[in-house]
Length: 109
Image (cartoon, rainbow, N blue to C red):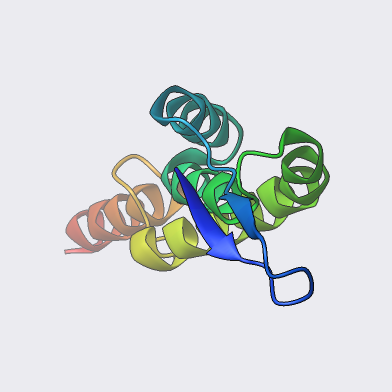
């Protein structure tokens, strides 16, 4: 998108050029973010490329440490959702000792 804007110093009109990322570039950034840092990484990569106006070098410089941080945050979120407490499962030592106690009680009768 180009517009002309008055130059206050020379009283001439200058062309104002704004650099933006194309839709294809934004899709590439979102895909790269998804494969390196999951769904949150996809959003972060897309937003970063738009904010950096399509400049890929700073996008990589920001993206590498950001992907590590985002992955750690997502792992904590998954751990909180699924919980880390373990309950005794069928066939574990807890169940075996309980069955053995019941058999001893039956034989003592």
